[in-house]
Image (tube, rainbow, N blue to C red; front, top):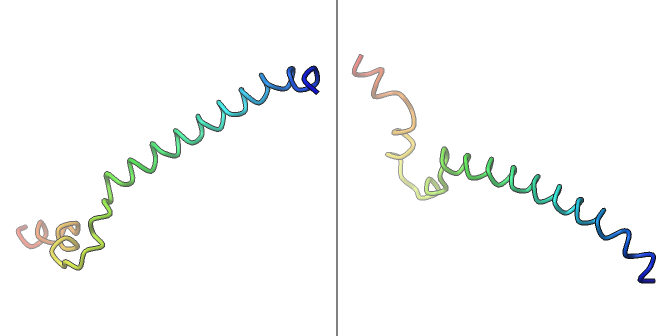
Length: 61
């Protein structure tokens, strides 16, 4: 059992490294989305929704 499982270990290591790389990319994308759209908007407040819209700029112009 050990002789057959030993040559498979480096292949699994490369696979796990690839998976971790993919997950780090996904985590980077998720963190970027969280920075752009924070989860604090779930609180009921109409002011936060109006701040995101460029309506006051149009009103001023």
